[in-house]
Image 1 (cartoon, rainbow over the protein chains, first blue to last red):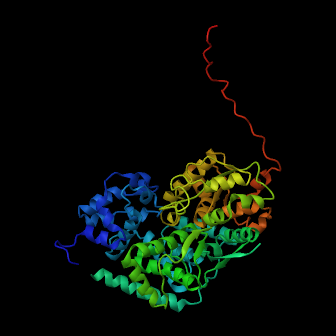
Image 2: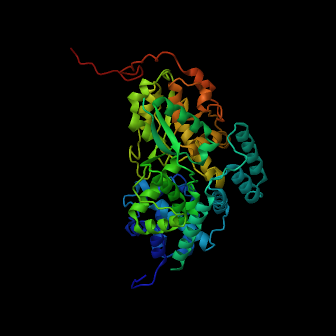
Length: 192
Length: 317
């Protein structure tokens, strides 16, 4: 990149997000935080996070639980008077936190990784596998929760709402080739 | 009637977990005279999980479906799940808007001998397609058993209306309200109609999700709803399966069943409930099905003034 100043944390967030340059237009109006259904559980509202990004508080931003509580409902994005793609910025922050090993509350990342593991293997999501793998390995420290999930799983099975065997797409080679190439492109991007 | 065919992206949920949606979609399609043909060898859209991990692979995962639809000569593709709809539409829009995204995604697709020209496949949601291409009048023509006596809460959820709805208002959509009224039922006043159901939060931070579910269900109950009507398998799952857990947490006793909009249309078309996938839900529809009346309820003219109101001033003669 040919900029006169060194690349800041703000630059990296803006560059990694499609439409991220609009981040500079934030008015600090707070429509985002006020619209957010999971806002009360967040360490920082999106508005506060954006001010922190501008201030270069990289460590604090990437350690915030806010992106992990984002439910991707797009309420903030729809209401932002500056059309900032807030939900997409949340995705960027999640990716950066994972890359830099910052986030120490692992449930959200583990859930995503387990979900995508099945998609990469078979081309389709596999809920029975996701539920058993995620809950057995990641919630083993919460036995009551496991018991509850087991009960729900049984009720889902009884109503024929869970497949016990995963389905695969036919042309798995094609999908794997595309995903591997896409990952290589993404990895090259990070090095720049 | 000539059978029109639409390219169809059912999504993983409709394969098993929300099979009721698939069954009722096909029942409604058959009656209205169109056919939903699956995009050949479609793959999962990655939900929100792939976008949380790695953006370019996430776009590429979705774009494979668009490329395969384009290759098969489809000009539009219909998604029934709101999240699949958003992912397909968003990938198409972002590839069109951001040259960098388009370049990288097509570079990845080339590894699978595919290519996608953004804008060549129009992504549509099933609800929008049925209401635009067929419309309320056509649906009314096929209505054999109007749903008199029911009050239903139209729940749009997030992703049909946001971030940029193409066919309805983002904050206050009304398409499903009109559909409910056209089928003879009453649309409940429902201010939480686009509030989030919690999505995958039930798995990550359950209390967060249960609070959202509680708000939605309570709002539907306050509006006198006998059932909630939804357009998304994730919303149906959360509101139906987790309603009991939300009741435990908030010490409430709501029992509001949650159905798909195609099940609603199917009921009015006269299908037997079991042919529309009823029976897979956690909260039973039996009380609701018994409540449907043969004749429209008499319209009660509201009194102009309440009896408790203060007397009107009388002018001296």
